[in-house]
Length: 174
Image 1 (cartoon, rainbow, N blue to C red):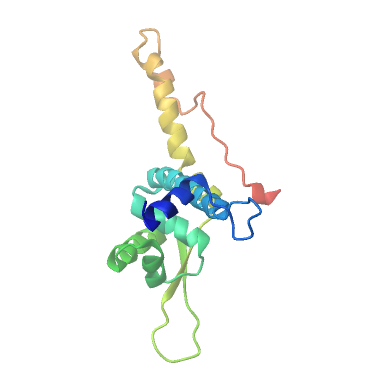
Image 2 (image 1 turned 180 degrees about the horizontal axis):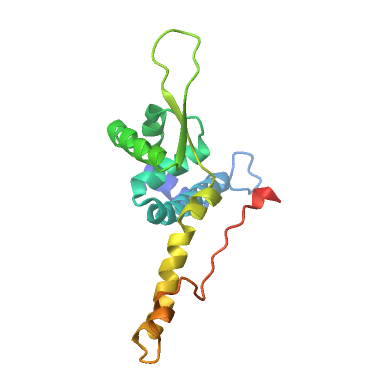
């Protein structure tokens, strides 16, 4: 058995620490790895939902980054997300136009270029912006029976009211 085999075995079965008190030296590392994995999976789930709301995974990753790091420049976002700078700049311009991110010039004492700093709007504001569209689509699906029913009147089929009502509440307001 080589030294590499021994260390690999110790990682999977746990190793006794140098003090010899029977505690495992790598338990903390395993817990940290599992916590990191859980956070990554949570972030991936959030990015999936946001990708649906924001149209692309790229825009979702930028949004998540800006929620975690407000007042970031496009270069900082590119570095933090691993996306190409040109992709980030294009997506930030679109997100700003759609009012999903806010921007302002970075203040600087020196001469030179003051880049824009970007911050993402609150998640409740993001959801609030799309909730009426989602509600209308859900109500259209719910009304399919009335549209195909011979007894339904044209007024019933075109009514904006429906069984689905979506309300978004901001917990910060409480």
